[in-house]
Length: 475
Image 1 (spheres, rainbow, N blue to C red):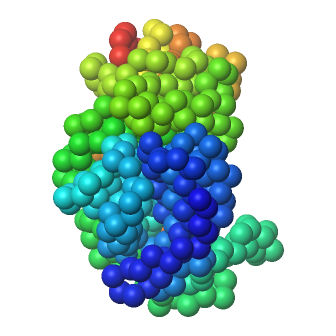
Image 2 (cartoon, rainbow, N blue to C red):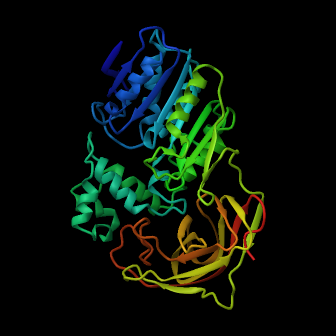
Image 3 (cartoon, rainbow, N blue to C red):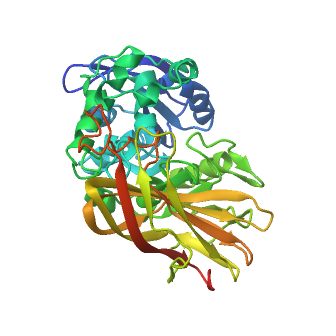
């Protein structure tokens, strides 16, 4: 039986449009997806699972596409997940084994559904979660861990998907081709008006207010860290080294430990393209993993791509036990720069470290800086790159921190798995801005409502710490 556009009531009376695809016989399992991007995109996937004897449900989240109600990202997903679970509880065909699945925003709703389902007394439970490039809350996708607004991401996403039940695909890239200065608009808080939307919409304004008030990062998660750690569920975590959400993919992998956890990380960005690299296809592995959950014989998959080696590792991803601390040559390294938000140049300092032994970087590099900026609040942007023997430079990790006048900062960079070779050179770039990825520090204490900028004199000393699986990285 196939039923398209089934109306499932939410707690506030909204109607959640849902496609239900059932096999001809009693389903041996159920897949649940809740998405803001249009449930129709998943019909072909649903038909394939239906042919395998698996029930398939895909639902538009509240306020999107055919679902009624107000579209407020991440606000209603827990209660609407509970409403879907209640509806499933009343269906005679609902099997005991359910897998919640999704990518990006839909991965967040998958975790919300799992938390609501497994936290109640029901005849079924989510036994597995497929979590691809997850965004589990507004903070995690709209703010850097330093707390700074992810400016380009926020404008691009809300400009295409905000204040509407449907999306304006390609609108922001096309607009930016005609107006390259769009992201330079001040104040940041009203920037969205430049694309024809209102600046007082909660979906646009709330992430900015949370950043301006320095709210605790991750405080608006759909599922808290404590809740994740309590979930007894198998997980398949899929991410990419070039995805801004790689920290989230690995955080979930480490946090949900009560059930068997599998991990696939490839040389991918947020769109996970191409899905196949060499002999490894995450699509094929995903189907294999899901079938193992439905058959109650869960497998554990480990596939993590080492870009330095150009090969997949099948070993469990772990942080290197050896922490190697590297300091710049103080005779050569400059330790100060002038930062101007309105300037054409972004001055920086670059440290270099020669690699004398083959080593594997695995885990989270960190930078410790003793900083000073007499004008007040300052941003510290660090980027780790590798220059190989052929002279090719590859950026492998970045991080950011914010200081008030003087103090010591520890900045965690993105996690890595990367083999470095003797003769390679590590470079660490330290700057005062990562615009337009991050909102600029205007030097006036309010980067989101300010319209003028002040130059900042930034000075520092510090070190780089690398997680090593074996050997010594530098000299």
